[in-house]
Image: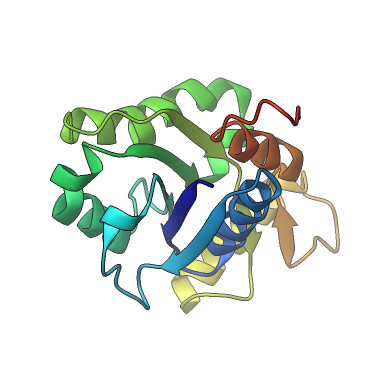
Length: 182
């Protein structure tokens, strides 16, 4: 049975929800999975894991500092592990921005840490939530929600751009299982 670690950095919780969905999908494939919010907890021993999935939310074009710190600190160990990376960002759902987002947020990490060779990289949509963050963040989110809602009157407080089926299929593909197809 494969042992997997799904660790993540999140600012407002959306990436954590994606990490939980990834973990759920890996468990369906028979893996033993531990999920860790890197802001709240430390990983004591990476040696016990066969697969390490590292996720981050993207805000203002940046990975969370906790995810980046984890990669930097553990790069040597990660170079000997099966590693998968994912990010949650708003531009993932925009066809004309998707390729650039992949380059900026995933390929750039691989370039910065060439000793790590991910088996897969996931680019997922994010969550626009006008109720979370400081006043500046809330104002930015309200503007983005208005754009996504095409100026409709009475726009929602939250717009979820995450494709849960895409996330589930990506996660299931991280573990080969000859007895179950997805």
